[in-house]
Length: 105
Ligand code: FES
Image 1: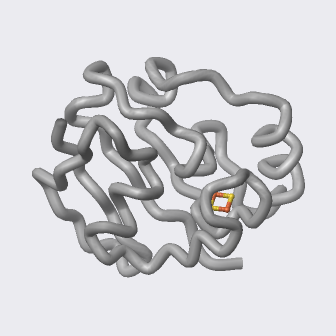
Image 2: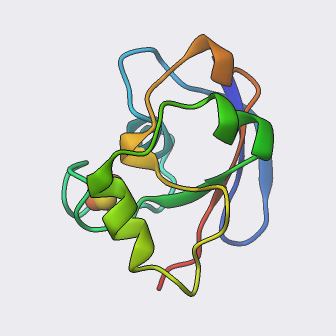
């Protein structure tokens, strides 16, 4: 599928490929977006924090307790469509999603 990515400088890129064996974080880092992913995708560092567009947020796999706990600690930058991108699973329904990389904290 293809998604649109808005980086921390506000640059918007359409047609960013997301392959079906990748988490959203893996797709973003493969495209060299500056996400540290210090924990390697284990929902414990929050460096992969991103925002989804409303529609895609509703269609994405649900937030589990581990992710929720970490998002809770981000209070300043957490929005209503915040996700840890390492926990967002590929889905055909997310084709065309708009993903904004959250500020570094
Ligand atoms: Fe660490 Fe997602 S990569 S929380």
